[in-house]
Image (cartoon, rainbow, N blue to C red):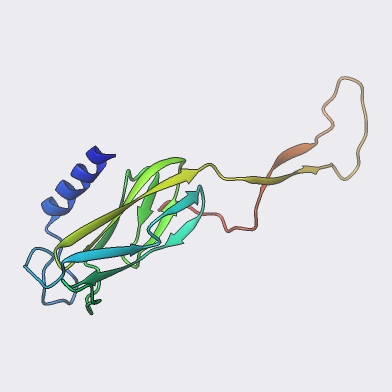
Length: 153
């Protein structure tokens, strides 16, 4: 996935992201030496939303009081990230989730699995009449686990 990391770095550098309301742009030197993303290891499922957090740390590993300038996910047809760190998974595959804090960028790689079908529900017509050679009008479809539908938009 190193080509994704390179592409993401180029994307972040090209856009010149500046933290909204912050005095420090993402490209100014700061005391941030490392960035830690949580969860660092995760798997997602199509239709799921996963909340990530990040903290910038100084040379001694002490957390700094700096908010992320940007969150992003690539490729965008697999997932998207909002500026609060919530990532929504749209399709199965590998996705890189990244954050910029104080000019430092960090990534985590997430495997997105297809959604799991919990059960199959069969719907019968209100007055089932059997006629030879005709469709009974039954419909069947996957019933997903108790999770709200996610729409791209």
